[in-house]
Length: 499
RNA sequence: CGGGGCGUAGCGCAGUCUGGUAGCGCGUUCGGUUCGGGACCGAAAGGUCGGAGGUUCAAAUCCUCUCGCCCCGACCA
Image (tube, rainbow, N blue to C red; front, side, top):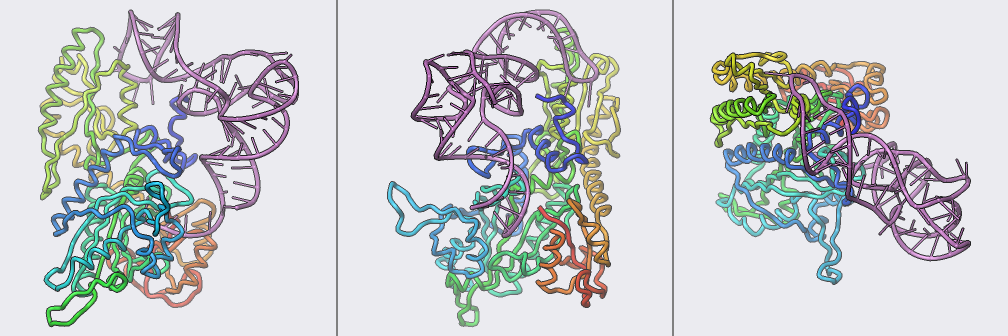
């Protein structure tokens, strides 16, 4: 192993390397190597995914959705039925041509997303307006043969959830699209403490086969944007492609209006880049698999026994404290680990620190004599700064509040960073300066609404229009002139380099 | 698919030019001493040198072929 100073490259030195270092040191995942572009999500990283799943799943159920599962393999002909869909996904498909030792009559593609096969089954299940709305979600893996991969942010295979719904009319479908976008936005902000901009994709960035794509865009510490979730209005495109017709209430016949929406393990990458620092991972308590690590300090066997006994008592009390989200459909308790490994305390401090555990408790003979505990929050904040010596009873009574405060503090900090990285630009020279080299910003600029201008901006700067903000999610609309063409524009759009 | 680089112990590398039968650091295992911010001492385990063929008394090293990986350019949750 290298010197400790080299374990995690400082952000300022090499941001992408820092990102990889944090993931490695926190033991979240590693590149699979033997399978190109794929990763192994290690137990600690998977525990975060499970927290994401548990909370989102409860939110989906609360909005009336049910889970189902569709096949991994999709007949190749399905993909080609929706013109834009084929065009969008064809380059990144993995195809199964042989099975059982024989060449297949019709190859299967490994799902890059499931609109087509779900469309097929919706067609079989829906015949009447009484069958609508149909609201299903699937937790699954998908595969997209990416050219360049990065842990969590873009891998060939990834885990996600895809919601698919069918409705009797466009208004209802549109409402669903917005409802689920808000579910994602609320989850990102409340649970992940990751502020997001909600908006609509431009036509060149929208999902292949959708009428409109909505998204939440998150601000990473290098001022690049991360598309953290999408919600699509599919119109009747897939309904028509898969002949999903129903008899309307008035006796007519119509194609269903569909939506789809998803978030993936990419969220974990967003979590890493929202809060972590040069010492490693930082996790908001609501996403942390472990909330507190107790480090026993002792010299003699007698002290060890005494300290571990006290640690066990404290862990038990903490572990019974309910820290569930108000209104949540499941319970969450403070998760504690007592680190009694045969290592020096300092090594343990670093161990839990780089895993982002929000709270560290040092417990030694001196503390026991004084009836106190030594507490250190992973990131100094209003919830605590530096090593704090707190009477045990007081600590136990305030632990929950400290975690809540810490969660709020991380969100506030992330929002402050996003605001600091956001800027309204009105001159092309300023724009070029903002995106020079590896530079990025959350740049709010006027745009003339044409694909040609959008492409020109991208070609010159690598920055792209991330979204047209929804009301209240960007600068208030006001007329201006396009940053590139000078043509009139009604409102500013979000432009940034993206992951 | 173009341009650049690399395959030697679990990880990071040296050795290759000038052939002589493999070494260093970290990690791992065992024993002991340590323990309020990354401990130390002692012992030990661990390698078909990416693969195949060739030259040679002798190949990690030279030659030929081959496989794989990484980085940079064209797609993307």
